[in-house]
Picture 1 (tube, rainbow, N blue to C red):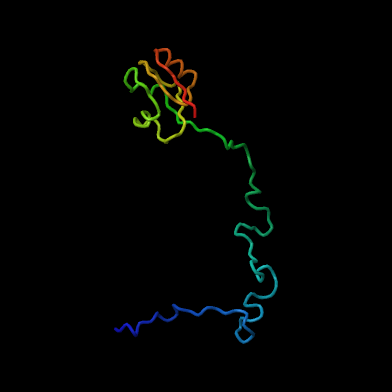
Picture 2: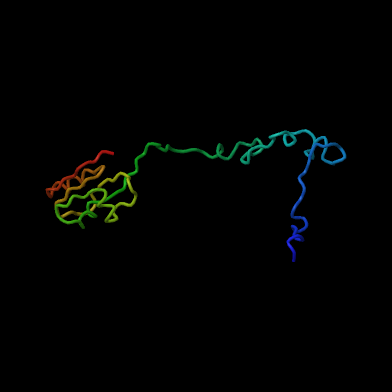
Length: 148
């Protein structure tokens, strides 16, 4: 085997088509596009989701309801989940992340009133339900609201 005898396999390298170069080339005049119509024109293709003039699928399917683009989705922590902390501890977002009560970094946290609490705690969150606030403050704890 010699380097001077190396060449690509037959059929792997084809010449570029030169269209519109006269009748002898078999690709002259209309350049292999046929005559007239949308596909013979430059840029003459419809978009892939075009359905031939039929009413498109996304307009045929009924739309229902309303999606609020400004919705804030809270991460929920229940009062019963806070019982695992030490008495008179200050519980904030970083501590909740550390103990895996909340997962998403930076998302707003709301404390709900499900479960029982037996120790006073200072809880710092973005929102509290009425029952959660009552349960925390009934034991001498504090429910501090952090603005977003």
